[in-house]
Each structure stands twice: as structure tokens, then as C-alpha cells.
Length: 122
Image 1 (cartoon, rainbow, N blue to C red):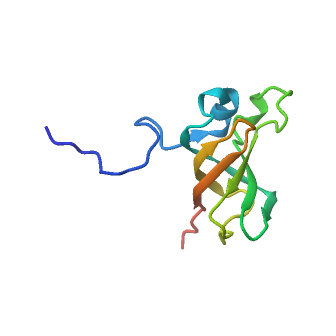
Image 2: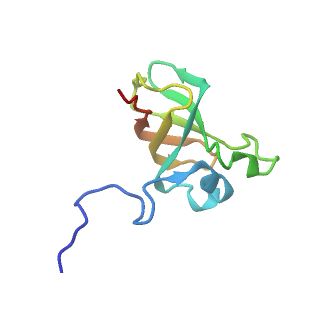
């Protein structure tokens, strides 16, 4: 039998490329301290850059209203990108997929970030 999986692919598990904001916020204890990828839409007015870190929030637009009101960020996860430079495409509404580790305080420390933008058809 031939193994069709590409070698050295950093995918958290075989069923998902990344976890949604909703899934992580509803079961945070499952993800704390584990290396995962998480995806959501960037909230533009939360983007900050201090020269060393890029800090921003992502949301899961389809399911965030279903989260309980006692959640302090109510559907948002704060991402801290630790590799130093602010990506040009990081802006409101862009889909972000970050790889890293969730801390016990709910901050997601990412060391890798992919941004997905809509393509214009000519």
C-alpha cells in the first residue's frame, strides 16, 4: 500500500487543517498548551504593531453570536504573532490562519500566519 500523505506537513490532525474560533472558545481546556492552527476573520480595529509583536483579534463571523454572553471577548481570540513584522495583507475581514499555542489566559501565541484574501476575477 502506498502512503499518499505528504511528509512533514504540520497539520494538527487528519480531519482539520485548522480549528474555528467557535470550537476553541467553547472548549478552551482542550487546546491550552497544544500546538494547533486556528482560523478566523481579522477584526481590523484591533491590529497593533509594536516593533516586535503583531497583536490582533480574529472572530468566527458565522458562529460568534452563539457563544455565551459571559465570555469576556464574546467570540474573539487575541493573536500575538511573535515573528516581528506586520504582514502587508493584515487588514479587516481577511481570513487569518495562525499556527501556535493557546496560553491558559486565552491569548494565542502564533509563530506562523497565513492570510487569505479574495481574488478579483478579470
